[in-house]
Length: 171
Ligand code: HEM
Image 1: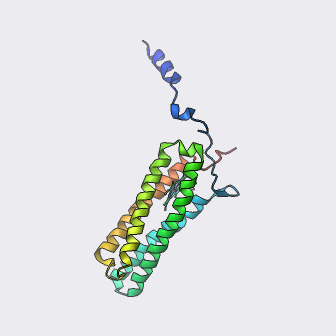
Image 2: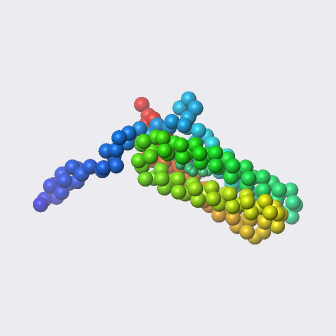
């Protein structure tokens, strides 16, 4: 068998996933006039997750209880906005056939659910004493949340800019 025959055979192979109905339908359905709600809503949990770590660090530095209270509020709102972003993302994942059939979209779902569990834990832990919660476990949890939110956001960006999920693929 020559190298040419092998490359011809490789060209004949068909990825069964790409044969699924609607594989090329990747345009967002959970959108306002074509603007995906998920992409618009993720900015809030991402920013608030960073705010919790910042407020924890300022509490550690100053000892001012204001920062521990700010961290409690940022953790709670970050978690709730994260859940809202998760709902829009999950609806997109389940309703759009081209997104549903691609493995990276499910990888993003798993990373995001891990993140939401951590954000919920970071908020819930503080509800039983927001000042005593900060050192050491609160701030450690906030640091972990920042790492995981960074990874989630980076991976979400890959879905859009590498796989073009949620987009109309240009015209
Ligand atoms: C929990 C379930 C989630 C699912 C199923 C999900 C699914 C998706 C999908 C399908 C996309 C592609 C764009 C689109 O179709 O709108 C996307 C993009 C993205 N996701 Fe998620 N997502 C989830 C949660 C999250 C969370 C909690 C965050 C961060 C806090 C996040 C951050 C991002 C980012 C930053 C993008 C790129 C947006 C852009 O650059 O336009 N996702 N996600």
